[in-house]
Amino acid sequence: MGKQTPPLLQVRGLSVGFGRYGRGFRKSSLAGVRDLSFTLNGGELLAVVGASGSGKSLLAHRILGILPANAAVGGQVLYEGRPLNAALAKRLRGREIVLVPQNVSYLDPMMRVGPQVAGPHAGREQKEKAARVLAGYGLGKEVQGKYPFELSGGMARRVLIATAVLGGPRLVVADEPTPGLHPAAAERVLGHFKEMAQNGAGVLLITHDLEAALKVADRVVVLYAGQAIEEAPAASFASEAALQHPYTRALWRASPAHGFEALPGTQPVGELPQGCAFAPRCPRRGPRCGEPVPYVQSGPGFVRCARAQGQAGGAGRQAPPAPRRAAPGEETEKETAQKNGAAAAQGKGLRAEAVTFDYPCGTRILECFDLAVAPGERVGVYAPSGRGKTTLCKLLASYEKPKQGRILVDGVPLEQCRGYCPVQLVWQHPEQVVDPRLPLGRTLAEAGAPEERLMNALGIQPDWLARYPAELSGGELQRFCIARALAPGTRYLLADEVSAMLDLSTQAQLWSFLVEECARRGIGLVAVSHAKPLLDRVCTRQITL
View 1: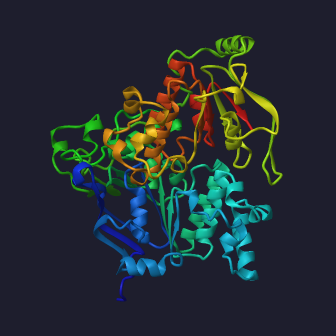
View 2 (view 1 turned 90 degrees about the horizontal axis):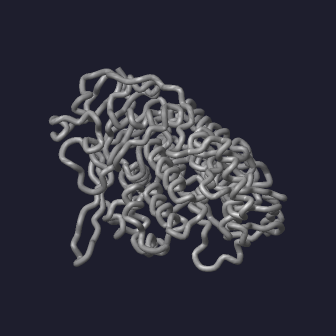
View 3 (view 1 turned 120 degrees about the vertical axis):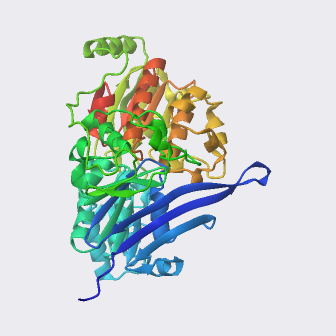
């Protein structure tokens, strides 16, 4: 018999933590990944899903060898049977092993798209290949001559992906590659990853988006608080009954298609409770859940649950019909129309009147555009990338000025508003709108002392206030940005893909809070999203750009 070929990637008992100093130079340890194990073969697409802060990006950075110097790493990572140490990772990085990063700021702002994808010294053949790859992601010749700041968030993300996969790598680590992408573009990107796997590459898809992962993945590993709590074939997610861990079932029920059910509580941060990390939130917890729980094979996969071990399924339910959930005290369509008409008659509301906007390069994004949002109304904005959704938000929040037309807030031109702006924008990429040099408590205080009620509702942990932005995930940062935007002076809230970086359960929890908060305070909400089912759930009406 010949020697058996080792798996492309093996992760064995991986742990990643960080040493940090608090007041009085007291040193503490912050664990991010705990006892993580899985295998990825060539020709396979493995999805790793979990909430923000569950350790997904830390896993990616360990594989690529780009963890910060203060990281404490345990366990083992093997690439084709060889220990993937720092020296080997450096030699293979960008060649055999590539990262599709989560943050679009990885793009060089001073280099045009074409040379950035092909390489600054690329020959004709390489440039033509880069053009073909970009075209495969729906980015034509006109995009190659643009700078990153001229692209929409979705277009910039596709450029990042094209740059990473151009060379035909053996192992692709895709860290949140689809947030901000229109469903058609996301499907194209994921389809390309699937094609790479079918051609022999190993693809590790790290994502919060369980629904997207299930379209292409062979297997799914679910993380919670840095631990793997379930691994199952993608086919097991066709119904709740085939899933074994209560948290995995909660993710399934949180989908807009399966009820949009929010899971109370938050993922633990720092020191875990004794036994199962999910036990404090689990409706099925019992005495055995306070004891250490191993990760064992169960049925076609693995599970870390005292009540599920040895079971190949269990009680569950099929997907119920998914009518839109009405918010507490929500009016009928007739009542909403009457209220909006009365508000307009009194000059109230956020209005864009005949707005036209051109970028300095001459590209026209909006032309004679009208929009009216009444106090307490929730308006969804849906469109593919590049249609001007984010630009519209910038105009409504006074970050940009229209070439023609005007923006009115309760009958007053927006430029005449002084002091705190009554229109607040929550951006798609929170890492770009917080000062990396300030602890997050000071960032939150920029709009005044935050209400404890808001902090609790958004799951902001007290010890996060002393951390810096680099010490939190993108989804955790977004909660700070939402709390900052909901200061007492806010009358209209613009939410630009605010939940794109969050897992399904946290999305349901966040939007339930936003709908109730806006209804309670009479805040007009503009929700921008590529997810039409989400807008169907939370908005009173929708427009398409």
